[in-house]
Length: 172
Image (cartoon, rainbow, N blue to C red; front, side, top):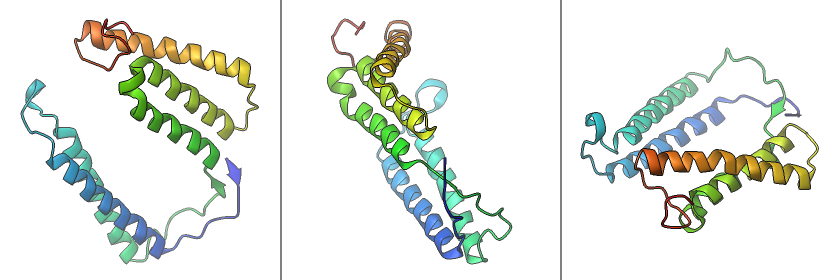
């Protein structure tokens, strides 16, 4: 974490965060509404978890707006001055977004390994560790493959759940 000047806590910014959470709950609810409600395993349908998240976001948003309207979080500790490392955040976000974008074209194993490599680089940068590209890249690729491949095999071979593969064999 990098040290910066302490941030100001204003009820107006807290209100904006609360309204943003409410908008996110609305968007999540609209998405959940479009998911079929047929009950699956244990009587829970595929739309159950999105509705739970929608309700949780709704409650959090209402609470944030309520607190902001009453003067904000006045009893919060002063900001320590730590701010997130945005470069690391960008690497992590790129890993997640590329995983979602590429999983159907390059398969589960390769896209998850790529996500691991980018996330590991982002975490190293956020911690201020020096990045030796050749060594760390090869180790990260190997570790990413060693994590993703057994997960893929467990889901496809043992649980019978279809994950996007590179081939139709169910092994890659």
